[in-house]
Amino acid sequence: MLDTPTNLASLLSDTELLVTKAYVDGAFGDAASGATFSVTNPARGDVIAQVADFDRADVAKAIASAVTAQKAWAARAAKERANILRRWYELIMAAQDDLAI
Image 1 (cartoon, rainbow, N blue to C red):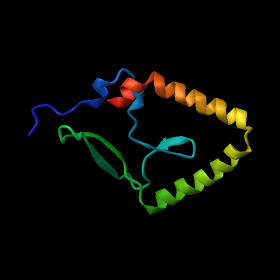
Image 2: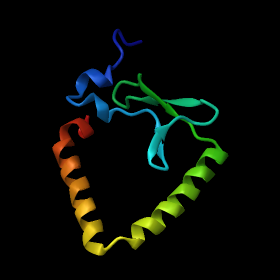
Image 3: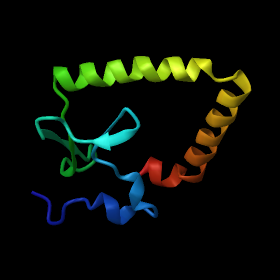
Image 4: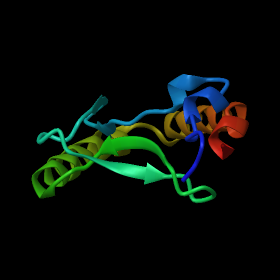
């Protein structure tokens, strides 16, 4: 048994990167049932977070939302999509140390 569990939030410089909700239809949310599952630290085996545990209905809603969002994404000009993806890349690179943790 571990003396002290991993406190993932304390290891991050930007604690907002630790999100335990699912991102669906432009917002973060829980499973409709409120169910969660444990995410374990593979190096130590202790639980580092409880995250939303989607059932089939939650997943079907997420897929339907993604299909709708894809149509709006495809309607954007290629240059606009490229700019968005470039900005996303820049955000990932700025947070790479936290994301690696």
